[in-house]
Length: 307
Ligand code: ZN
Image (cartoon, rainbow, N blue to C red; front, side, top):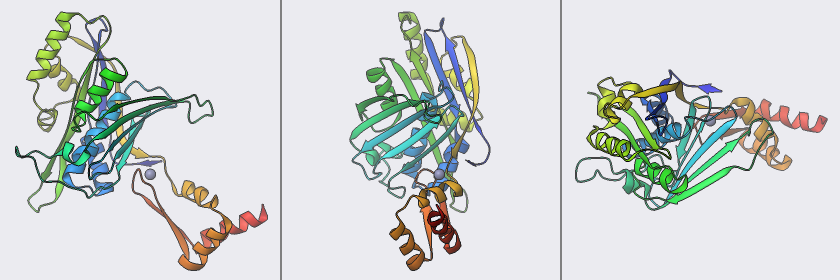
């Protein structure tokens, strides 16, 4: 397991007699790790960072051995976004074209929808995948409705899972004095209305959410996930059910790269040894490259002959 840097924080809470479920997360370090690993443009940083955060929030109640995958398949220059979260609070993700970029919008904001394009938003929930108790995964999909990501998570929850939801996701990119870009703040929140939510509760939440500033402006001023919910729920009382450390992490490893390469057919393995004097594998999800030198490949071939 590649465990990168320090953790961020996510909370899960309920309000109004459990007719409102809400989650909030500060994901600045998680998004920074993704941006650094994939060397993304600013617009891709926002698109990927929002999707990573949304995936964590959507997966906030995952149980052990559960896995949630979000795939945004649009026709924009980003070429698609794939993210995956599990019950340990880890998330990983990638885009097809990390360097893709589009001009800022007229209002000076990053044009995330411009880089995502039109297409489909997919969610897959799997359980028991790591222990052979694999059950048929749950799959849901909706068309991309805005491409700004938060609206797409909200539309998916409302349409596909019949849970009316408000979703806010943000990534704030900055440049320091020497022009180096960095993630100054990232995070988001999700408010879900369960069956039985009263009209009064719905109205109160709608009003509070409409007054809520951008999540990133609150986070850069030091807001915690609890502070984010307090603002978005506008004074409504809530009870925190769970607090979970979250981070960008990927289960790939040199050993896994070796076992993958071991499964390659014999002739191809010999040609890698002869022509390239080794092999290199790059993990899509975290962009880590594993190099197998000549002797590692010879070992694989020898073990195969012995078997
Ligand atoms: Zn990886």
